[in-house]
Length: 88
Image (tube, rainbow, N blue to C red; front, side, top):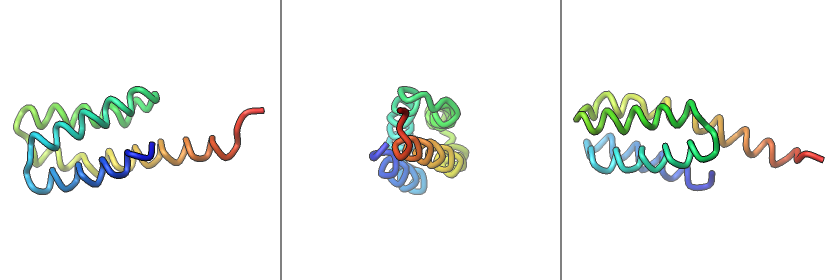
């Protein structure tokens, strides 16, 4: 959770600079972490970014970065909210 913000910033920078390899690698890392915690929707967006990069579609991949950021922020907020109200 703590690394997600940094990865998202780096993803945006890599996409904006047209770096397909780095954008794909960061999307892959995010996909793995998001899948591991059960954040399926966010993981699907990361997988789509990764797939678009493999296809050389950096513009389309970069266009999904905001969607991934929003989905991931929602997941992080839910996790932080759950930490504030632990099960008894």
